[in-house]
Structures are given as structure tokens and as C-alpha cells.
Image 1: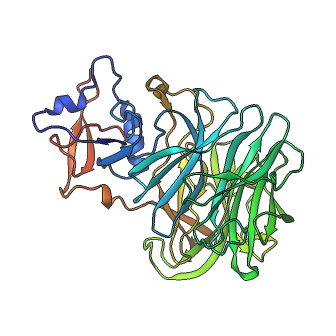
Image 2: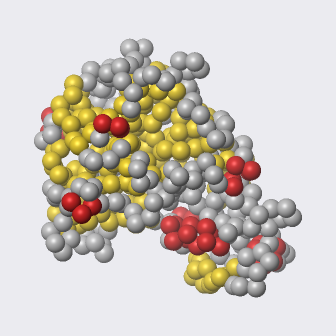
Image 3: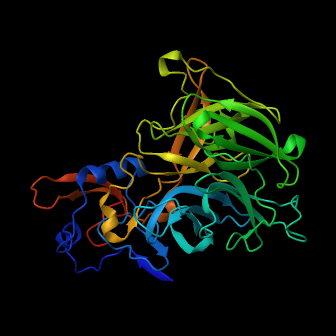
Length: 423
């Protein structure tokens, strides 16, 4: 494993830090400041990766990027019993990508410093491509795949062909490092296209698994139920006026105070998150669930076209996914593909052999708004593990061939420790 530490030797000057190498392109100030707004504050620390060059000018040091080639949607997010975070993602070995995708893999102890792992679920050439999905921990062995084991992982993904999208499953006995495809695949097959992105969660009141999946072009989400993760029965649908992808169905705490992330939990609610392909945004719908039917707790005004509110003001966050395996008393944690579909393949990082970045990980909870509506609170996951002991201070940053100085609020960052300001 190649370790790249974002450090600079003491004899280097500030000019060495802010001036790109000959022939390299300096970070654009707008992109830089946008990254700072997204991440909250600049942190530079130890980043672990396999077979990748993370010292190139465009490489973020806080946002996750693939070691090489193409990445898009986060997939199969979960936290295991030892507190290790697992992230899979849509991976292609060419830029721009075609339809052939696999699941790339990485793990982290703090959601910022990631260790890249080998491909977890590879595509089947000339048979099917491994599209987006989710993963759960089958701690009670409801599937029968894991005798004498409480940490078996089951992944669900869309198998894509040019004519059919169907739902497959794969299972792992080594904590998500490698997967075996279920020999009885597909587990859900309607022989249609635009049927994708399964998300699974456990519903304790009926001791059953719930799966949501998108009928993208038909504008609805289908709900399925299963006792064993293998045999699925459709139980309901939910409609929304947009091209829907990457549905996420989760439980989420309703807290008393938007300014206090650990304030009293008033209730446990359900929330459906939908990626809107027409806007490159993610909509959120709080509601209730009785084991078969999801019911929104608010209506959406005609002035918005009946659309649910967006998780973000900007249009550069898509395919948001939430981690499985958290305690109900915790705030939920998400990661998004930090992109707009309009420019996803038209960014300069392809010259360095990689493309796309994830958002910073975020904590979320619901609060009641002034008009009795529900608001989604979103804040970056604690970055203290990436922080030096130095206090906050401003570090001037000068774009190449420019006399203007942009002050950047940083913590633990100085001319003797910084190597790269580009997030």
C-alpha cells in the first residue's frame, strides 16, 4: 500500500506551495472556494490509497476520489460492528465510461482517510454490468448464507443489459472484501428497462426486510418485502413527478433543536430520498411506514410542480446514499456523488487519469419547521481526526499569474505543513 501524506518539508517556501509544478494547472479559485464551502474547512492529513498518485494538482485531499479511472454513484454503504466504514462505488476502467460498471471498494475509520481495496463485485463481460445498489449486514442469518456467522454482508445491485434491468444479490463472508453472486439471480426481474437501484433496510416490527427500487421513467418507487432477502413480494408504490433514480429509504431521528445535533429525539421517522435526474438534485420526503405503505407527512405545493424539497441548494450533489448499520439514536450519515450530470464527463481531471469525487460525509436529522413542516439538517461529519493541534488562522492564497490574494480559513495549516490547498 502506497501512503501519501500531505506534508511539505520545512525548507519549502510558501511560493513552493501555491505555485503549481511546471506545466501543471493551478486550482481555479472558484472551484477551490466552492470546495471549502462544501467541506466546511480545509484539513490536510494522512490519506491512504493503493496504487494511485494523490499529489497531482487536481487531486482532492478531503473528498474521496477513485485511485484511477471513472467513479460515480456511492453504493452499498455500511458500518460494521467494529466501527469500520465501508463504501462501494460505481467504477469503470475507461473515461468517459460506457455502461459497463463494477463496484469499486474502500474502507475508512473516520470517513475521511480511505484505504482503497480491489474491485468487490466485477462485471460479467458480454453478460451484465453491475449498477447501483445497497448492502446490509445479515446478523441473524435470515438468508441462510452465513451459518455460525453474525457479520455476513448481502449486497443488492441492478444487473444492466441493453434490454433488461433486474435486481441481483451477492453475499460476502469476509466483511465485504469479496462477494459471491447468488446462483439463483435475479431475485427480482420484471423483464423491463429503467428498473434499478435497490435499497434495503430491516423493518423490526414485522421482522422483515424492505427493498425500494426505482421505476425511473415511470415516475414511481416500488416497495418490496422479504423475510429471507431472497424471495421478494411487492407491497406498495410511491409516486413523484420526476425521473427518479437511486431511491434511499431510511429511519431518521426527529430532534428538538436544529442547532443541537444531539438534542432530544422526539420521534423516529422514515424518509425517502430520491435523485431527480432532470435537475441533478436529491429530494427528501419525510413520512411514516407501516411495513407495507409509505405515507408522506407533508404535501408538496403546486408552485414547485408537486416536487419534494431538495437536500441541497446547489445542483452538484447526486445519487446520495446513506450508511446501513447505525444505531437508531444516531444521526444518519450520507455520501453523495459531487457532480452535475450536465458536466460529469467534462472536467479537467481526466488528464490525470481519474474522474469524479464524492461529497464530504454528512450527518442528518429532521426538525420541525416554523410552519409545522419538516426540515432536514445536514452538517459535515466531525473532521477532528484530520486536524492538527494548531489554531485557526488565515493563509493567503495567490492564483497563478495574479496579484489578488484570497484569504482561506484553515485549521492546523501553515506554510511549513501544507502541500496542496486543493480539496
